[in-house]
Image (cartoon, helix red, strand yellow):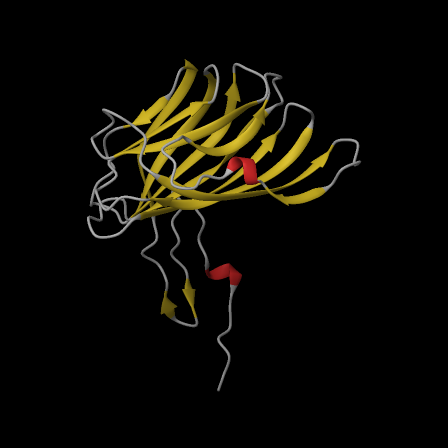
Length: 208
């Protein structure tokens, strides 16, 4: 049986994030990231997306660019809502691990973060930790939310963040889990554990 040949030049990663290539003549497109909305923080207590999360798309992506904290050593985190943002605190179970390395190269580590996961909790879900106030201490990354409008299944999500931590560590952070509700998730809120989101942009996309 012949093996499928992969041609990397067949993929068009344009500024619309379109995935339009082919693999051995089979179209694997239909994965366009469609920009729905974007918000820029300015000493914001939180950033909420209360519209645009509906049955139009089965998958949503939130992209974070240069999220900066007003306080040292805090978390960047999120939660979901089933009532359009009137309240947040859906019961959630998560897992969280990270790789990190200091600028002095003295402590390279890959570790599961027991203190940063949740087990049937209504708390906010940690995405990045150890946020700092220096101008070079910010975080970027993305969060994927799957089928939030389902009224049959729980809502899975996964996130990956790159973080320059307050003690001068580079961190690669992974979070995954599920919002344990069969009600539709129709709003998402982002915040710092303490203080404000000083700066940064969050963009929400739907996957066509």
